[in-house]
Image (tube, rainbow, N blue to C red; front, side, top):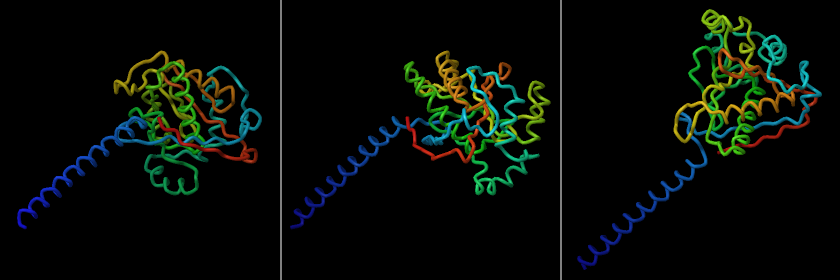
Length: 265
């Protein structure tokens, strides 16, 4: 009887052992599948949300704009749209911005931008990762179209870098003192504007930043297409090696409906 119990206990132990091994194998397998579908940027694994409003930006922009195939919209032109659609008043200091963030989010005025499977941040030394919701939607759609163009070139392992977003007045002044080419009154102070680097792109295969002719051409084509659609204003800045982009917002009463979906690589 005692030997029978010992054999029975040994069988249970073997079964428990192999069940544990099976669970570990399944966990590793599903983790592998998840890794294939979602890229890792820093410590984040996030989908990109694409929101499109059913509105013709060429016919119903909230501020004047003419369709163009050139990326040469100066700060003064972009500022018209920033003043119309962005923050009513720039924040004087970083502290003033941080103390107002909860209120701005509740009122759907300003949201935090996070890295996702389209883009990552370069070290943000003179700006904060916040934009108006329309600018975030634009940024994610640029990323979506960028991946489509890269697919055509079999180069869809590149992601673009964001180098600047929202700036307070004190950050803008620090940047102006450091770089005289930076405007003292910038669209960046209104949460409508983002800078995208064309100098280097993140290669998910090599896990490093590197220049890429194909990625530059893909990004340029995306921005030209969206400039023709009056979705954005853009200038290619040579000193900073970036595309300086301001969102164009449609008139609210012309938006019929909003469509959204998640994009996961």
